[in-house]
Amino acid sequence: MSNTNGILYIVATPIGNLSDISLRGLEVLGSVSLIAAEDTRNSKVLLNHHSIQTPMTAYHEHNEDRKTAFLLDKLTAGESIALISDAGTPLINDPGYSLVEKATQAGIQVMPIPGACAIIAALSASGIATDRFSFEGFLPRTSGARQTVFEDYQKRQGTLIFYESSHRIAKCMDDVLAVYQPTHRMSIARELTKTYETIVTGTVEAVHTLVMSDSNMQRGEFVVLIEGFDKKQHKDDGLSTEDLEVLKTLMGECSVKTAVKLAVQLTGQSKKLLYTTALALNNAD
Ligand code: SAM
Image (tube, rainbow, N blue to C red; front, side, top):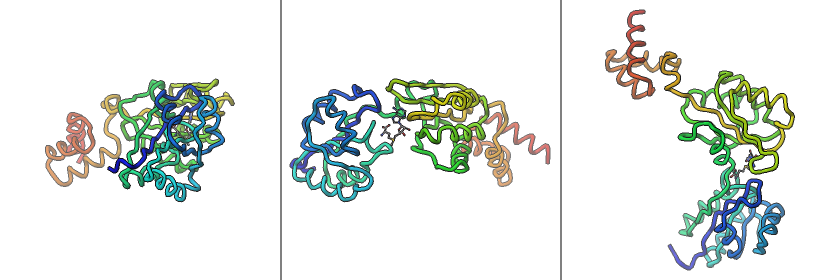
């Protein structure tokens, strides 16, 4: 790595409360020669609030290619640059991937300055399982496509997290209710770190009712979290259609013992449940 290159800093900025930026983030923003910002007018508010006078240049999805080349030239000439987005962590559903990809390819040091990120803030306070999760960004715009995503995740372990906009949150909640059991747990985190911050966690039915009955619950910015499939909770419920198909297919090819052994590996279901189901299938034949 050439030490004549500058450093590209990826600086997380607040998602609402202007104090939610690290001391190191402020130091970096004050010391680099240029800040590449998604929207310079928006970021001006943050910089003014913290009395930072570093020049800014716009870097957004419409000028990404051209600006990436411009910023790389500066970095290789030895200037250090900070990349920021309108809110939270750059590149997380925000511009910057092209710049970071090319900077790493060019041997330029890329340094993260961590901080706010709406999904992590929401997850940490939701009361929904945090040990395993998947982030889907924004879901598709049509109801059918959203329901397909939910149908897929309904069978997966781990919390599903996604961003949602105010004009789609009600329709999205209808889709959640159409696919998940009404008693399934979920959470909505709205306007995090802002005046009207609201985090509601409960059953799909209860959260749906709340969103539909209170128009304030359809305003602002949202992170939605849906609990994943819990194998322990469902261990006595019998096999899902997919797991049953796996078992049946294996039983058509090998002995019950081998089929059960392989099915345990493929489905993650308990050996006992698979074995009793296999015996029941054999007896039914
Ligand atoms: N890079 C950002 C981050 O680190 O969270 C996300 C950018 S993405 C374009 C913007 C979306 O993030 C919003 O539409 C909303 O779904 C979510 N979001 C951002 N700020 C939020 C907040 N304060 N409360 C809830 N959701 C927020």
